[in-house]
Image (tube, rainbow, N blue to C red; front, top):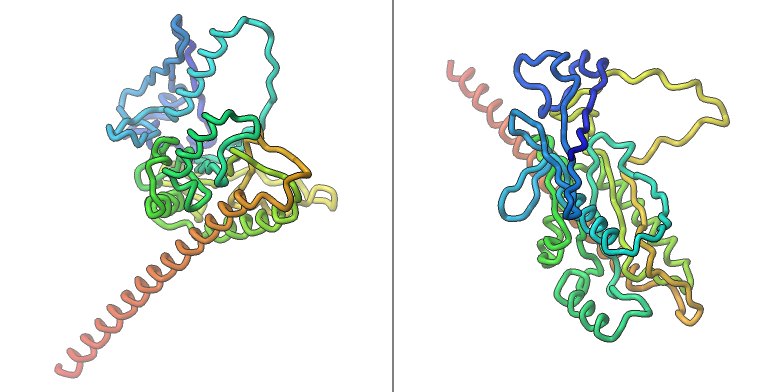
Length: 335
């Protein structure tokens, strides 16, 4: 059977004009927007099927699969859930223990996420020789070799389109160094503007992380990843889809409750299943540091390129304005 999920937008947000372009069309009333349904079905074969109930045909995610596939959900997440279900079904049915993980995207309205596989070595100490050869070949054929970085997944909200663009790990494996740089640019571009407000604090946080890892003697973060998250709403606090209602007044601050303002970008080291601490390994993890330093270099290059482009645009605007002033002055003289 189906499990029907019904979403109820906040009445205050709707009253103040806050509604997704996917949910408010034409003359729809607030009442008609109070419930939008999506149906999820767990099939007997052991997979999840999500059936959108959208009459206007609009979707929220575009997957880069060469087919211009649009869905109401991130397609890679559903694939991973289906894989996990298959593992459960093939197990003996004995109880399993799980770690409860933090949802890092919970504080974002339009979370933009980049998952980077870090380092030049992608296998654990206990990997077989066959697996080591296979993973070394994969590293040599991707950006993991020249950069110590490989894109494993990405979603970025496009303000001009009103939906996310997604890339999976297979897309990341297909990239060369130039393709990696272009994808990094698209991760920091919302379809309207390049997000300097994200780029600059991101570089600062990566530099601080580099300095911290340089001090970690004998730690090795094999096969781990770096997760980068930021808010897809524009620097002015708005997106094309939604203008939030005024938030409630914050509680009165005291010396105990006062906190520094949150950074617009979050950087997290994740996936430590094969990380080790071994005194026989001297110094910090140079493979991980190689990837971090190259990521900073790539971002600094984007910074310079886009600053140059912005400067040229301002100069052109100034030159055009000056030309118009000269034309007006010439006409006045002739008259």
